[in-house]
Image 1 (tube, rainbow, N blue to C red):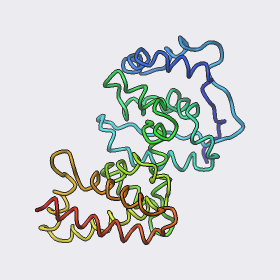
Image 2: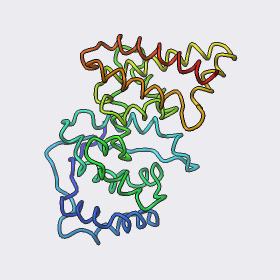
Image 3: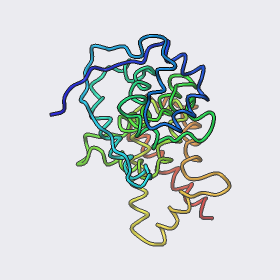
Image 4: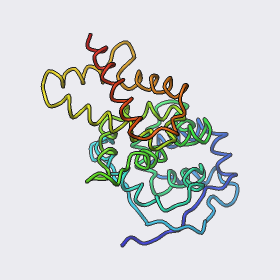
Length: 264
């Protein structure tokens, strides 16, 4: 059994200093495999201990630098370690920044390398607001990817999680819209995607049709266009009042239409 450790938050003062110096901090992360530089931005205490405990978990690094190879495994590890925490902790920026700059630092550097002046601000901090931050955050988006796709009714409850981790756009375009906060909506959509993927891949010709729709053209693809259709559907209906089955049937019908369109 893993040892338990106390949850920590970065202090508000440290977080403010990191945000005010986001470009400079991003460069330090880019150049340093340790966080000794962090003390520079601390005006006293860096972390605050909370009453909650979590397993002392460890995420994986990819040996060849290709983080996609360990993404799914890390998503599951993160979820299993943190899912007992209250929602107000899991949606708190100070909590996620604590993980990013301590035990998960090296993994975060590999998962979200600093490639521009805005990378640290956009993906390590919740700069765009709480909801946007959750789905853009280096670690938080991984956690909520699992929370919204885990399904205990399936033989493998992580089957849908694995499916979206194999091609993140299957899930990511949903998270840009507030409808993704409704789990039954996400499950209905992802189940439709997965069933269609399995159906089309039974035959080489139809498998190619699905591949073309996923690849898309002119900046559009199956998932970007379906998200627009779902938003339109939600604008005239109360999505949270519909069942998962209703969402599933709508999603499957619209995706078939879009697959045909991308192959015409």
